[in-house]
Image (tube, rainbow, N blue to C red):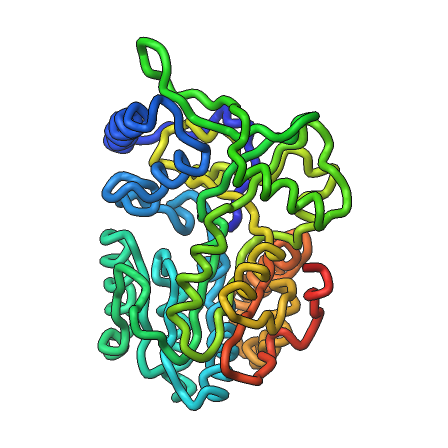
Length: 399
């Protein structure tokens, strides 16, 4: 996800129709908060404004991805990303003797279209390509893009509203999915911890963010983090934790009979995530390619996100019966999985195309761009393969 940082001032004003959509969502949210006793956890607020059916950011119809949206993901930067990913998926399916690909949250559909196009060109198409997508609007956009690219591929693609009941043999893909899971925000106190909450108070019922004593489950989670770090977080330290991550991953793992879960996202291992100097956490809001911290601004129109704790992801995978087979940076993954081969014949391109491709490679791989902050993790079940993309720069020791 690429955005520029902003203090919240100077953001472009949404169109009147979008503001009306946000107002209707807030009306529903106020009723929900009243039904919950006048206060909800920050995680519940995040879940509501992102996923409330028909109104939330990811289930409504606003354009989110690409130049006209709020952020640019790696598949939007260049088809190179998905073509290299196709090489890795092909290796995995070959090791399994064929199988199915399940993509969680396909966004604009660009990754699916480019990946399937590359696999078709290599005569390596999966038996099925499943897309789990909660937004009907995004399902329609994905279908339209695939039909425009290659109508013949549509017969192989199926859309799901929930994870499949029958465990599949193949590869589950999740690109920038975990960062959108709701998180609790906590603040370490001299004695215990506080939990961020959202209220609708006063005559105007204006939304406000406050703090209350953390419930036992959140206190245990903070204490467990400190136990693994070997130090206590300083009073006033603010950060996030996804208490629902283990349950989410358990459901994902239950959909995999044999094969791989391949995740890519921006994040760190636990020690880096909860570094002493990162005392205000990683939570951000994204609107029209700008990042800011006002979580109450235009609910339903902006993305709310936190960086991924890959150590927690590894523990969730282990609890679900999967083995962590690799963890590395995006740059190392792309290089190891076949970026150089995808760039072969670059000299035959016109100068303008070469320059565009070179710029894309820099964005995807340089440390100051996406190359270092974005990480890849693969977990597996019932297969001995160590995927090629994880043979360079193994970071599992940092989990």
